[in-house]
Image 1: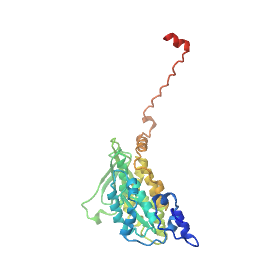
Image 2: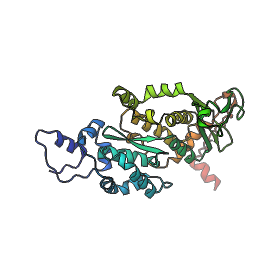
Image 3: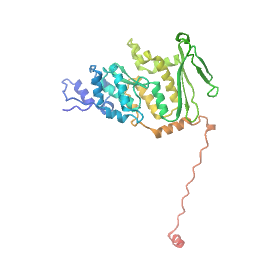
Length: 332
């Protein structure tokens, strides 16, 4: 009896007398639509680490799936090269979770290069983590954002923030780059803002360290699990500053919703933090142009009713007057 789906293999693996099927082929559809996180974990919990070449050879069977998922602006070869570079830290992840994380990454068109996105290992599972640059990349792809500015403000930097002033006079940051690192001090604030192609500037999002810690403590299951188990290997432990800036960018995308893909990316990101299936939140099509146009129009609309343009009154369609057969005969 052939076991073609992941669910079949789970049942076989957990039965009293396990079946011995022919070599199974794990397809993306089995991983995504036929499995729960528990089944993914049970199915391949015992999978041992494989060499990078062996895992890459297995992933090459899905090159057509990755090529179809990736948008035209991302080269498949570049994507797979980044995957190969990341594999040494992932070859003990379950194959099902690795395929799911990489397919989620591909659907958003982000390269897992450590800058735009990261595939990290959480126990036996691979998890897709979009970074701040990944969110910024999707903002640019909307075609509506001219420039995005993010950064950390250090104790020795010159800066000023006056939210009641008009842009761009409300915010100023002059990094003290010539100071030695110890004199520049520790980071005290993270910020993010963008200029739209229309010439308008977004709100400036500023987060203190305490803000970032509150976000971490409330939303990151991975961090909470690490603390409970006495580990210090979560992203919030080892890449706190990057996660701090990323949190500011996440707040920015809520202020300037440039495309529905950004909303889906945040949902997939949150699912990964909470230990849920991520690929269910990924777009099924690389480009969502019509929806992005509508989202941008809503984002640029004034929040003040008095500034809203007057609505055009729709014209009433006049129904043609009906004539009798005798009247039509007389007109001839």
